[in-house]
Length: 365
Image 1: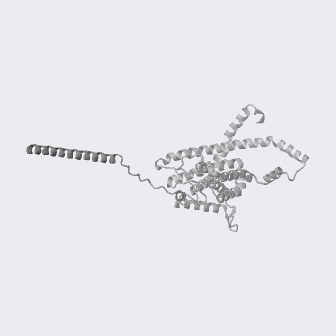
Image 2 (image 1 turned 120 degrees about the vertical axis):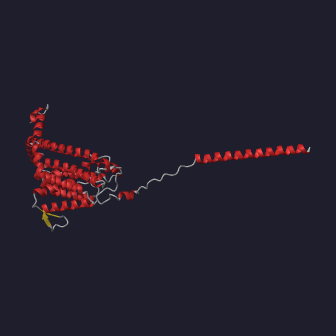
Image 3 (image 1 turned 30 degrees about the vertical axis):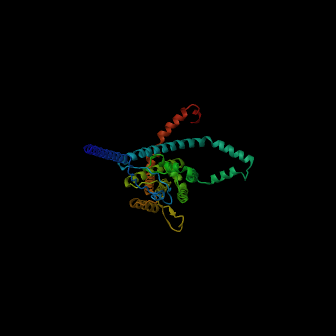
């Protein structure tokens, strides 16, 4: 009995040890599974995102009294700067050629229309005299005001109206994206070519609009008397695109990107052309009429100021566009008129032949 009881105790002891080993293994297995689950479903570390500037701080980068407060954010790589200037360059050359070709045809059609409508106008004046004048007729008052303007003022009236319309569109909240995309020129933008001309009709502030339109109105009579309305329109539109391309090139070279807008580049072409043709003309500042200076001195001073602003990196105005417009104005009245406008006769002749051969238009050659 004693031996049996001892053997029973040994067997029970072995069983107890085996039970303990089994429990230990199960515990280890559980621990292994638990740790694997913890590692398997562990949350990934949070990615540290670069801090983006707040909208207010970002807008201050290019914010000024004449620039829009919102900037189109588009990434740009400096490695393809030459490629990005190729399309604007082709657009500038093509647009300038089309502008002068259209102006040549416009002048031809205008002269033709004046000859054909001479007797119609005389007959209409005779009928008005027979019917009697109505002093309170609104249409007659508008015609009287329009006829009191010079040819230059009549020519730039449409340009001023277009600028005022675009200025009003800037005040429409739903148009903000469209205005920034198409009516501000920026070489870092996805849209490159069309804003080169549309931005010249765009002004964000009332002061910018008023100053540019006042200068354009003041010099309109002089420039149109020199070039004529058709040639003036070709020069003005071409100057807007050329000054925008000069702005693109300067921003690419310096790496100072930002949106530009305004008719200052095209108006600088008008100012430079008049000052080059009439260097001794007396000019004055609107706020300081007692100080007068010659047109040549004014042009040199403005170009010197823009050159300093371009070198020093001033961001209030687009000095590269101003310089590009001024250089184009000086070149055109010195050489461009002979090289471009006076060589339009073959084009006008081709247009005349096409017009006379077109069915239904043979009688009006």
